[in-house]
Image (tube, rainbow, N blue to C red):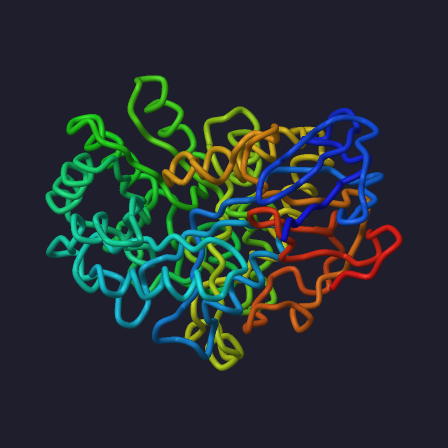
Length: 437
């Protein structure tokens, strides 16, 4: 049976208002005044922005092994509520996703859940140990078709191992996504090294620990002619290195997280471990640098680094707490607050950094991050930019409540998400004249 939705009076990419017909998984027609028959569900899109479904290159789904924090089912449901139609699941599970068997397990769990498309990220090294390359070729050839490889949570610190990984992934057009953290410079580090860490008496995490690895790896990528993606860029210095590398023609891309766009190290003053994250929250100057870099294209994507933890791993003293924050259900609102409402980006820019470019980097742009055009896959999200909401982590779909935005009023709300033309999220109040089955 045909599944048809008419999105009436929507604004694709925040532009002129029109109607968009979705049928049988595709965008079937675009134009003002499109007709609707009795088999078509009509959605009132007045005041809504239509974007291609969001794509996250940096999600922790925790399964297998830490289902107390998150499962593929709960994490992908959270992703759909955040406007995502595809996520890349990081490899630091238990067991580590360093073999074809584990990545295929994660891929199948995502397919069975059905909320978003799940693309597993393969580990660079066996067990994230940093010593021996994992089964990169086998993971690439598996049913999961892995193209992104990362030891995220840990840095591939050995330059020889990093060089070999960059060389190896060239064979199947893969990319190594580096967690840039020089381990010797961050032993026992708790937060950004600066005035606030000194006043709080917490061990500092210097910006140079990130910047040294970024500098080394862009040179390695140039040397071997391979693709490098720098995860969660957080310092002004890293921004300048990436800018230099791009000007030189090196195949480097970079991401920033919502929390590094929104929060500073001042948040740590209350010793609340919800603000403990890796890399740490930086200074106001660093925040301004990453915002400017996202606006001018030096930073290519926004990656959530959604890192759920059970309460016992966060509800403790700062030094014992786990690093990480949730982010899938709030990312788009944070980008709206920091970039769109601030006049630094348009909704078309948001589509670029949260859908089109991450899909291209992850090599899933055959289905995701596509133009809103007739004949294209109907992986779409409808956003109400005029909405306001106070974040309540306990009302979210993710199993964990370690959101740094709890009690914060954020703009915007996802009111519908379509995966291959079928709604995974839909506010029933928008449906004209009928009740959804």
